[in-house]
Length: 221
Image (tube, rainbow, N blue to C red; front, side, top):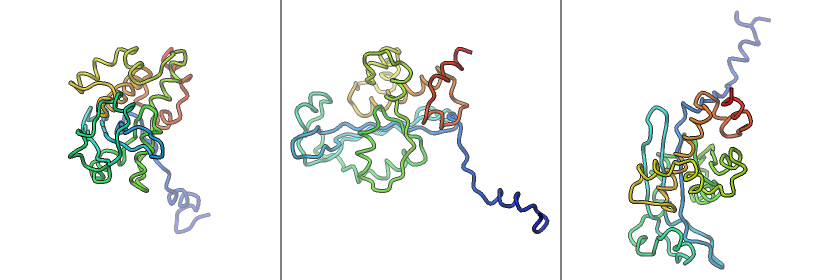
């Protein structure tokens, strides 16, 4: 059947917007990490530092950003022992909400990367309806790719894979549990996985819902 000289089926197909799934190598990735004040009785945990690190195959590493975050909530001793952030570091710090332009610039239209994304997703709820995502969780990938390891923490994986020197080169004078250092480490780990399994030309959905057994099979071939 023709309508206006064009088959009906062809016209219907043309009207349907079919989403284009980009290749991994065509995506912009932004890794994000928060350091927190630590959980205390009767208080909801809050962020005291944010770090973001962007990378794409075309631009390489770019748009690094780090800031302490103001809060009137005391930093728990247990948290301070981990990241070393004190109330004095937060004295002139901006609020997370005031950093919306910086977050939007780096996270909008990017594939987000985090090592254990639950904390990062929770703190980003400060921006209702932000629409950031999709997410790649390097902790999930690490557990799937190296299931026999006793420790899948970011530092342990980077040390085992000999990636820590590359992180230190990118973020000198910082160390683990600094938000920018950890964000850069998550990105370095992701890049290593992309290169190790030649994933640049695969659909990004393969990274979001990975079949790692197929990755190993392709690498073996």
